[in-house]
Length: 294
Image (tube, rainbow, N blue to C red; front, top):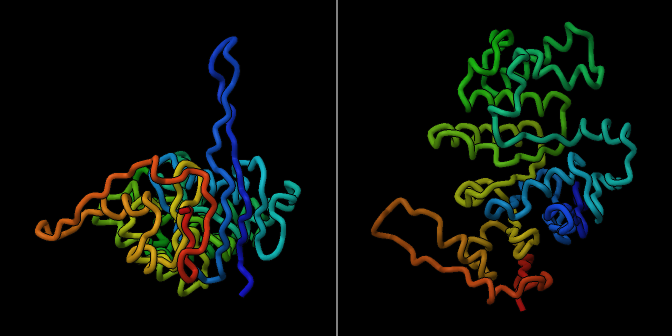
C-alpha cells in the first residue's frame, strides 16, 4: 500500500547566538528523520520533552520550515509547494495543538473559532458555515447552542474538543495530534482519546499522534517511532515495541511506565548514553522492527 505521508531525511537546525563576539551555535532539533504513515493508520511519535517530536510535526505542515529533507503527502512534494498551494494543502492536513488554553483566541466566540477555517478558504455561505459549525460541535460532543460563548467559559477538555472541531472543519484526511491530552486532567484524558478513536473510524482519518505518555500510545497506535535527541532510534508495530524493545533508550522509557499494582513493580532500567551508539543508522532487527543498534 502506498503511504499517505512519507518523511525522508527530515532535518531542522536552529541557529542560536552565544552572545556578542562569541559567534553562533547550530542545534539540530530534528536530525535525519524518516518514516511513513499508511492511510487510516495511527502512527505514534514518542520521546521525552526536547526530543524533536513537535518540531517534526510542525515541519511536516511547514508551520516551521525544515532545513532539508523531503515530505510527500498523497504523492506530492509538500516542501516544493508555493505559499498558495500550501494553503490549499492544509485543507487535507490539520493539527490539534497541545495546549487548549493557548490555542484558542480568547477574544473570539466559539462559533467564529470553528468557522475560521471555512472563512479563510471561502467555503460556503454564512448560513452554510453556521450549519457546518453546529454539525461540528455536535460531532465532538458539544452543544451547538454554545456558539456564542467564549473559550474561558469552557473546561480544558471542552476547549480541546473545540480545537478538534476547528481542525475537522475542512474535512481533512490527515491530522497531527500534538500531545492533545497532556494538558488535561487524567479524568478527562480518556474521554478525549476515545473521541479521537471514534472520529477516526467515522471519518476515515489518519493520525500522527505525538505524545510522551506511553500508556496512551500503546492503547491507540498501530506503529510507534521513538525519538531521542532529534533522531528516531526505534520504529516498530506498537505490540512489538512494547513487548520486545531493542534500543536502550526505549527500554529505559518503558521501564518508567507507572504500574497500577504496587506489588507488580518492574525494575527501572537506567539509560546509559554511552551504550546507545548515537548516530547509528536504523536497521531491521525483526520483521517490520527497526532499531539504531549495532
